[in-house]
Length: 384
Image (cartoon, rainbow, N blue to C red; front, side):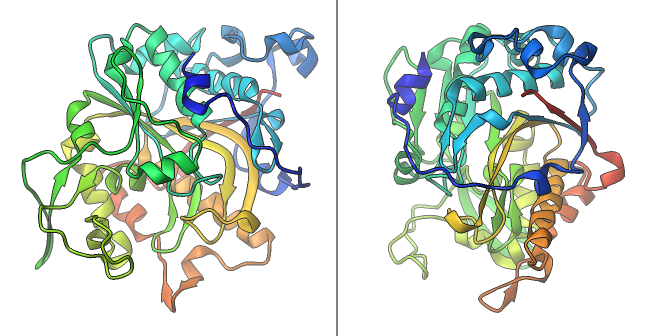
């Protein structure tokens, strides 16, 4: 299976820390009881062997999917420590979230609703916060396996992110072999020049080759605090993760010699750059589904990993509305911050400047989704 190939079958071992996750799990959505009032033991058929198996329909079947509905599946056993996970439980959690969201009997059936045989599918992960505030490679591996089991050839599935160093720090094993699911960093820029305009301000850029190659995209992000935009989630993962600079090698002042166009989009807390980029057909028309790897939450100091500001969440989310996802991440991050005696991100400063999540409201105004809590359905349920 791709899981062992992608991660090398290894698991980082660290001493377990006691983390109180009740504050972040309480009140973020209604918890659905298991069918028939079954206990966790009964639900899992009284055996650990059930972990990792395809879940039966009655437990996760749901009504028609609302575009602004977010399924939040939770399993306390997915983490075995602050930096370690149980890969089998993670698979069960992903399957449960997908089945619940799509109303299907199996995760493979759920995937088939959004990704079709004959399509080339890219799984866009986020590893900027590696090693532990990033997408888990086991998550990407299982999603790749599900896509393949749904009928999509391995050669037509590619897991990718921007920087090879970040991916490797996050335990991803880069592979570009024929007959396999590729795991790769950016492959280069599409030759066609693009232009972003915000009044008199303009940025020339290119789309990354993989987003152009893909017919459909599975957007896999993480819930994090961000030093410029307050929070980061579904929209920034795509918008700032698939752009490339022109041939002119302009140095980033903060990182001399760093060849990237992303800092040029940072003006105004990345607003309106994030929603503008996401609204382009290259992204908006290709992203078919969003999965939030919410095993851990970073509530301060992001987007880079900060161990002392990391908290276990033990959740997987599935949604289609990127604005609703990011608005929900903002609410959750601020809830944790409040519980810890910290200011909300809107009132917090980074280098003496506010880090306002303005892009979320702009995205809603542009019709990319809703940030109105009254129109967002949080379908939160416990698997174990």
